[in-house]
Length: 337
Image: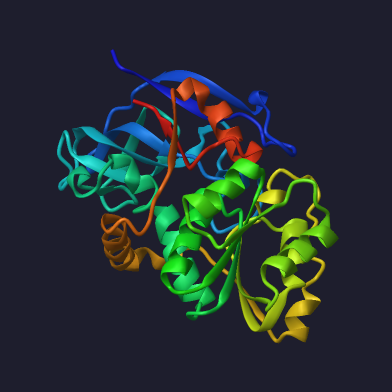
């Protein structure tokens, strides 16, 4: 008899998650109702946003219930179906959970995908998934860069940031990335073709402010913000008139027990600049548009995407925590099957 291993949230993390916040259990597979289908998850996307879903806070998605499997985007194969439009053996992608098998319903988030359209099926979790679409629509629709603009990307070696920088370069912008460590900074300029990279490690706000000013003596027109904290504050001190800040993430605060916030928002007044939050869910209806353009650039060798795949549901905690230690080398993906 098949069993379903599930990575459960047993208690809400206080600060940085610890192993005892979770439990890997084995359960019997449920019986499908009419209109449902069973997906064997092959890969799951591990994203910083999942940390926020673990807190009992009002947000754009409800908190993950205690004793439920941790929510995650997955790609897999239909194992059994009682739903029209979903056949056994069909590849699908959806917002499911960290588990071997997920029960899905027709009309829900899980939709068919074609592995033959991409170099690797995992690309549906990177370039052609929420990561790539966040970069594409976040940069072009929210930040509205113009050719010749100076674009500052924080968390630039991450899955989203690395794509944002490449897209900005394609658009004719001068691109500066902030990342942690010499190796990641070298990857920004050598692999992703950023114009400059700043290592934030060992720098306080004043040093970061000065480093950005040195890399962008004419000021910054766009900030694509993934980190927050003193990195955002340093960026705000370098804004040009009418600059745009796209707020994608605040990973520096996800494991903090006290919210620090930004202290230099007054610079938005001085520079008549704007800051706008962005969420990829707002662009689902336009994913086809974004994927077509990204696919064209990737086929032409104009965008490179790195994926870091760890294997085994039993290694979920260690793989997830790479997102916060910075030890992953590309989009963090867990191979389940």
